[in-house]
Length: 346
Image (cartoon, rainbow, N blue to C red; front, side):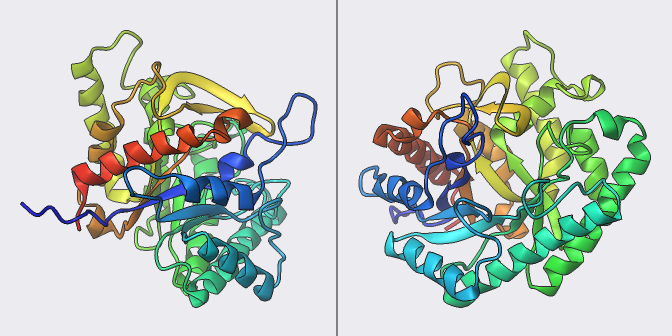
C-alpha cells in the first residue's frame, strides 16, 4: 500500500462563516473581513498539512458583486498570496443581495437569474486568472421558510424548478455547474424528499445537482420542517441512524456534486437574517450527533464520477471568539484530513 500523501479531494475552508448571521444590528457581532478569514485559514497547520483553498460568497462585505474584472483579479491575487485556491462560489441569490425568490413573481425570478449571471462572470475572471480550476456555483430557492410554499406545494415546486432550469442554462453557457444547497430553511428544499422532487423536476443533472452539508442533512433525517418525511425519531439507536442515513444518501448522492464537512448537535438555530436551520457545531463538539468521517463516506462514494475534486468545511454562525481561535481551525483541518485519508481517490 502506498505511503504517498493523499492529494484528492482538496481541502477547503468556507469564507462565509465570517458573514452569515453577522451584522450591525443590536445583539449581532460584526462581520470578519475576507483578508482576516484568509489569514485564519492559511495559518491552520496539522503536521505540515494545510488547507488547499477556500469556497467563497460573492457579496458584500467580502465582495462587491458589481466589482470590475480588475477588482476581482486583485481579490484573486490576494487569495493566491495566502497560498490558497478558489473552489465553489456562492451566488448572491437572496432578497437584499442581488437576487430574490426563485418562487416569486417574474421580477423576483429575474433578479435570481441576475445573481447567477453575476456569479458566472466572477467565476470566469477567477478561472482565467488561474486561481480557480474546479468547483461549482451554489444556489438555493432564496425563499425563506416553508409557509408560503405550503399554500400550493406542487405549483410552487414547479415554479422553483422553472427558475432553476433557466439558471442552469445560464451556468452551462458559461461552462459552470450549479449545486442546490439542501437546508431545512429553503422552501421546496426543506426535506430530503422535497429536495429530490425538485432535482427531478428540474431534470438537468449535467448542469444542476445537489450540495450536501453534513449538518443540514442531519435535520432532513429528523423531518424538522416536514414531519411526514422523517426517517428517524428522537431516541433512535445507532443501527436505526445508519439505516436511515443510507436511505437518504442513496437517494441524494447521485445528484451530489458539492460536499460540506460539518457537525450538528441536533438543534435548530438562526441568527441575523438567516432563518432557523441546522446548527453547525465545532468539529470536536461533545454534543455533536455525527461521526463526521463515517458519515462522509456515504456522500463520497463514487465522488470522482460526479466531478467532485474538493470538500469544504462549513461552520456558519459560530461566535467570533470561536472563529478567532487558531485551535478552531486546526481541529477542523484535522477532521478534514481524516476524511481525505479515509476516502481519497488520489
